[in-house]
Image 1 (tube, helix red, strand yellow):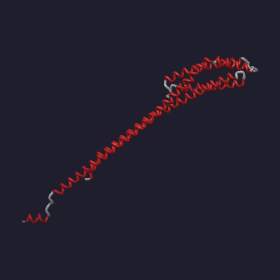
Image 2 (tube, helix red, strand yellow; image 1 turned 135 degrees about the vertical axis):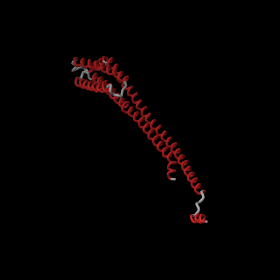
Image 3 (cartoon, helix red, strand yellow; image 1 turned 30 degrees about the vertical axis):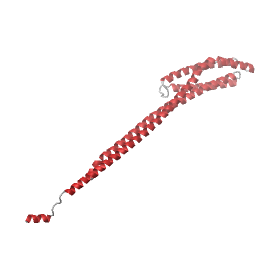
Image 4 (cartoon, helix red, strand yellow; image 1 turned 180 degrees about the vertical axis):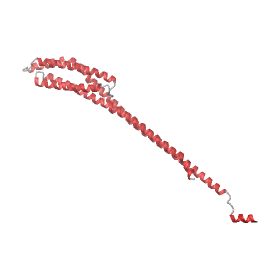
Length: 255
């Protein structure tokens, strides 16, 4: 009887195994999908946005030191201090640009790198114009220049850098625009990760609910079948005639 019941319960056991395997598969799918989206978001888009923010920051610092240099063009000590700051920021900008342009990196696309090559060319042109004005200021021997003359020179230098700074604006504006795009992509990826987890939860809940009900129904059915079968066997055993006692059989045979 026990063997019979075990045989009847085997389908329910198999159903539990199938249900567990389905849950494992769904969980693995959800985790893998979320990991891919998370890696894409953090490793690529957030990294790119951070690097673009640094590039723009270095560029803005260069413009600031340029303006300060023009204001103090007749003050050699301050002028050279700002020239040095300008040069240092330019070096950092080039380092970050070269990092972004590295072909092995995954943070930027080929189209992004093509645009950044234009930024690099714009920065090179701007710095060339700035260096030309620095050389000009050094050759003018401006010690003792009056305040009014220094002011006139500041305006003159600012006008002469116009072509350079206008072209350099392509880097500043482009880096800012691309940073916003990368941040938006990262936010979209985060939403997709959350959506994947939500889908996984709902699918898992559905399978657990439907599968659980199905297993319970199957168990109930098998239990009824086992009871009915056991009852049938019991009734069949009751309906069979009982064998006569041995003593009665012996008397009958003697007679």
